[in-house]
Image (tube, one colour):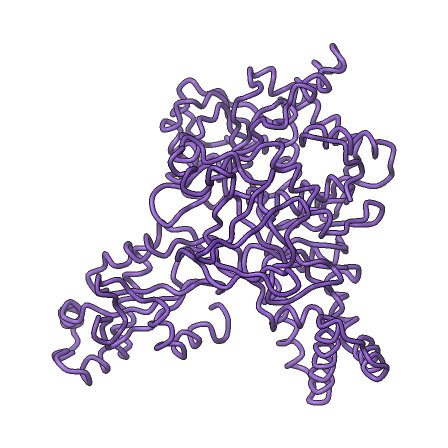
Length: 621
């Protein structure tokens, strides 16, 4: 539960928590520096937020302005966020992997006055498009040397400073006139805009989701009913992007409100090492990480002796049986308890040590958790709280409970959240967690929020007999990868279809670790290209010839080269990793096209199910 429930804005929450724990020996944050983690006290953090808030004021930023954030996860991200929201400034975070053009669109649309930029790489991208952001007046660098050897000539009318300079200036102001931060916090209202989070749709440009202080406060108070955080002992390891609504609310705001220590992983590549160093007690994550964790454990077990492999397999099966009993609220018999105790001592204890040995539970979101993976994690003695939501709902709508988990469901609605199923099966939600709307898009807002305040989620679902929500289908075709990334396949398919070698293409990627594609070539163009390459392909005028051509290494090489060329501008998670070439076209006659010549995705996936699974066998390349 939150340390204190009496707050109506995130700014008030910041003040309450830092005041309550100002004399505590417990760290607010843990940061890796010089090869080791160091703690940051609540008192130190409060002083830094106070100084940066006043530093922002010295630049002329004030309530109602918007501030961009271009940074990976780090303490300065949170410092910037709190300093902005205590001023009534709405921040606009972007993923560090966005292209310059994507960054330009977001910051231009949001009309940001200033941007906090972490390093030289991010600044380099910003400099390419700074002229496209006419509202921008200030760039604030986190790393002092970020601007070294970069051409700043494009910064007409834009001033560059550093976060350190802002903090130093703010300290002088705070010393001269104490108490200013409290006055700023008191001016922030629950319905003030807290953040603009831009999400991609199936077509067109991303939309800016307007979330207020009221939205996030409601979600924090609701989420703590499902996420039992102990302020005295809990430590959370943060590695998901803070610009994502799930990590920001669940891994950051909720944990801070409850007094948990937040540690930052250095990167996804060092996550396993950081787990052992931080020894967290809870962790927000996505199914893809849990899939990789399971795969890594199983691969290591497979390298051991035949006897040890048998012990491992026996232990996992015992753990699964125990979890299924608990899940169905059945009694775990004495013999099963005894077997599990042995399995825990021989196998599971060692597995838990890889996470630091103290992990109580994962909070999983962003995509569906495969039952096989969930059972495995539960079997090892680590719980998983799977939740559901979307950016427009701040984001959590429902979540499983720690001791009442039901795999295959996304749990019970939060206590302050209304959920109902529309006549067409779509999940609708209403409450203080629902966004104000899309920025500068009244029509788009009206499409998803009805006059009674019900938000359309775009997902199809149902309640089971115990009131647990189950997602049964997606109303639209946006993929959610097992890493939690939202991917619109249409624009990517359109892009790759621009290759003269590709006649038809269908992407696969929903709840998968990466994108794959089924491709029907333009056989005539392929014949010409193969001939130009010096081959002797013959003609693709019958089924056997097309099958032979589809399977040839030359064909695969040419199409792969074209795909690599075309998808260079895309983000990494939007790129096709593997593909299969099909000898048969999608047609109305074979049932793979609708009468209006749209690909019937479910039918194609059914026909080529074995081929699709083969593209995911063995994991990522």
